[in-house]
Image (spheres, rainbow, N blue to C red):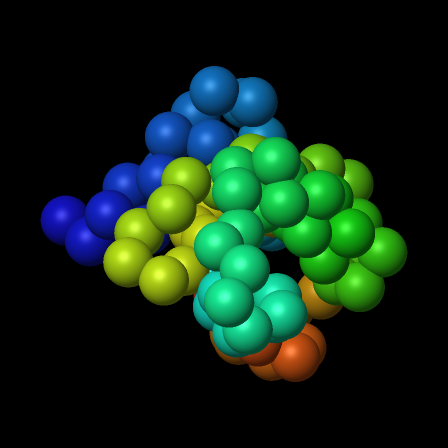
Length: 94
């Protein structure tokens, strides 16, 4: 099972959420060149992206995989399959 899909499944199970949520992946390219992003940077980015940009109610703090942050957004209002914003991709699952 793909790591991101597994992470999303765990997020849904832990919150008991039946509402729409999905996996959020954001590239390190969003940060200035020569600066290595930290987990704290990822948490701030995910809070902003999930809640302010995508309109979801919650974000699940990301992990680092390669040169990406991978986490989840929960209780999202949209029915679209994939939404792209900047260097972030939200893949919704129902």
